[in-house]
Image 1 (tube, rainbow, N blue to C red):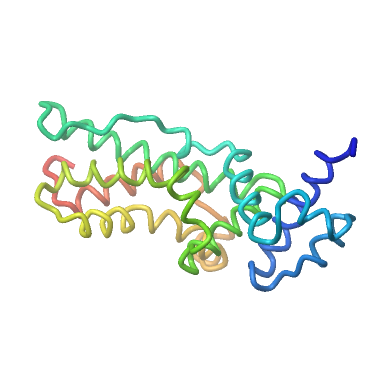
Image 2 (tube, rainbow, N blue to C red):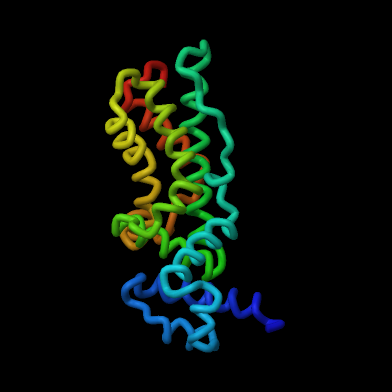
Length: 216
């Protein structure tokens, strides 16, 4: 099978587009094989079935996209360090900037990137039961850093409260992607803030004020 890598990639691309359009439950394997111009048996051969193909869509999408958030490699700030507060604020800034850049890339790049973004957002909105393994690998470490930064800025928070605050911080950024139609109506047809850097700084200031951080 000299064209096996190409066939495997065609199946992933076809599945990405169809999962974006109809969700996991709304797509059949025959439909995927037809769009990829492949034999139905090749899905089992390369991925073991629908679940394996879906996991490949998510994994390879994360690896393919030039994600700024997934590239973050920041040590957890030490709450006892003299500059812990400054490091925590900078940590929030980097997370917000990276999240904004990721969404801008996902919304502006080629159709396959936009389809992958739609698959991820759909999975997150539906509770993400199939996203758990990839969450541990690609997203959880960065969310833990975000929660740690929030814990430094608001000492004494429970783990549950830090998770809630973390979601509250990234929620407004995700809303720009989850509600693109409404965002366009309110922003002269723009699908996302024109100046991502300024939007990230605005959200940082808003977050720090909401946390009651002095000097924000």
